Length: 430
Image (cartoon, rainbow, N blue to C red; front, side, top):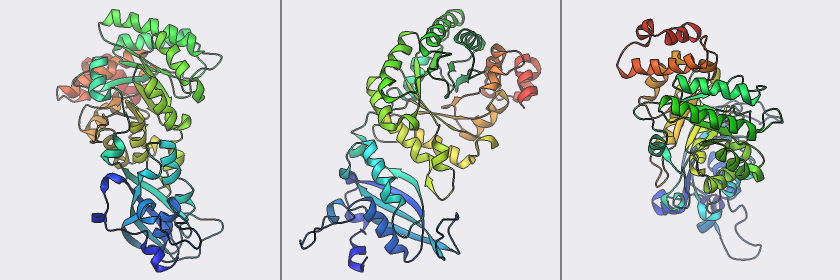
């Protein structure tokens, strides 16, 4: 690429209309000149060929993605990860901010992702390693999306949960249990104080637990638990399936008493989530299968906060994400970045409820609350409720007892001395 060609993919940020561009922050490693590599990255994402042969025209001013900031962080002997064929070193490690004109694809998530995470980003010449770190949307783009139907405030009103976290529970055993005993476990947990009993992300509509049968039993159990406790209870039904069944399964589950539905957002596709958001009468909950496969490598793929923002944009009221603790292999900083991506101002898009999860119980609630710093989150044990020595009723009660201690400024361990369910949880899971 000649110098004049390279210059066409650069812009002074003060000279572009911020309402017309998405802002993309990327890390990349390149062989050769970083400035030329960044121009290639923009070119491949947008107008790689900006004129016809023999015609005096240039489509870059209107349609090209443009570098507005480039920092070379250092040089490496070789790439972060071994490649075949290997890249002849040394390579430059760079961070770049790109302004990408959203008129190129419009308010269409599939088309946007094809541009910013597609062939252009990951097959740009001389850039074998690249990771999309963040994305920012202008208000003109956000105005064309609905976002969450309820948001955190709406969920608090709808589910009557105030001044504390939302207590979810993943019913266990998650795979293999017929609908009857599955519903019995949920009912016991609701009676013990659980707010939301949920299907596992791998349990949807199998032959041995059809959603029609399971949701009917769970819907009836939920109503009995509400009558017994005087509290609102939620059955969260997993309706993940082929796209053409999503609306049908939503309607089936809701008619049977499910008052929230869950999707594995990336496997079904963000456009499918957005379609269902237009149809849904209950809150939509996103789970995180497929996310680690795209995000775990530090310098390659896409950062989880981007995926969190996209799920919120698509219309998810609740976003379950990899949480704290060693099992989830996610740093505390990254979890908090995802929590912030759920709740930070985003134009007209309502906040989504963040639910960092993974091997939680009453023994971890205090630490999760301390990390997050407020009560606008969901807490989602599985075995912490359904593997409690006293059964799911005591498992759910242990969560409420742990929160009672936190809210009163007491030590959870000290409070447990007079709370058998909490004491058993700490002994088992602490």
